[in-house]
Image (tube, rainbow, N blue to C red; front, side, top):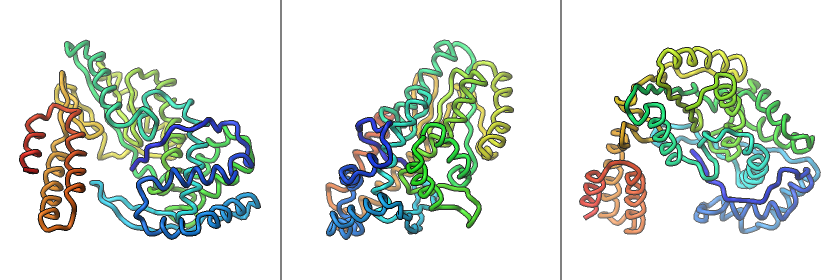
Length: 349
């Protein structure tokens, strides 16, 4: 789950008092509410907007702020995920901290980290993978192997102490560090364990990139891997020499365990030839073209069929139906999928 960010002014050198100014809280609220205007909790908060934001500001100024509890629920997107949702006041603060942390840390990230960053995302990641595949295979004239890896229960296993030490490397203001610690320690998968960041917090997205930047730097600087991409906790290496790829693979679990207290997901260690197709970021990359993932196509037709039933019975509007269809057509335009697109248009009538 990823939230796109808007461009914003550089807040790298802000101290705590500058950061928590009431003007910044109002701006953070304005950005937070985009696309959420119909949500009841937001509407209730906005009825007394000035009082609520000034109250938040006062608690931050006096350093009496305490992060609230989380509402828990599950979503299927398509995997079943356990979401923890903070109250509106806390989520406004998350937006403010996200902007600050993004400005401080993003310049230190590698180019080929594609999750929750400006001018990146899944489609840019797939385009880059296509370019890498052409280079490694010498325009598809020699072997190209892809090693795809996934971290086991990443969000549940982020170590609070390690994360905080990484934050301290670039942030000197003690009050900002106090506030970040309050957000980090507001959640733990087990009481007193000091592990886990919640799916649902905007700050978790930047925390994830800060944490896994250590892995990125190890792979790029220590292992000297040239063709490497990461999106969230999924990452992939391309190489023409299979033995070299296996050598790199043996070093990665050791680094993860010793430095980040993380482990690879043993069920998602995949090595494939490019000619067999490389499944990454929702697409299958092959020599000369890209295909939509088969599972995604099946899920897409199932959801469109469900939406059509809802539309015919008056439960959703024509606008809502069209939004769903256009989103899927947008996904398909990045792949060789003319026939699939035509089939969707026929379903729509």
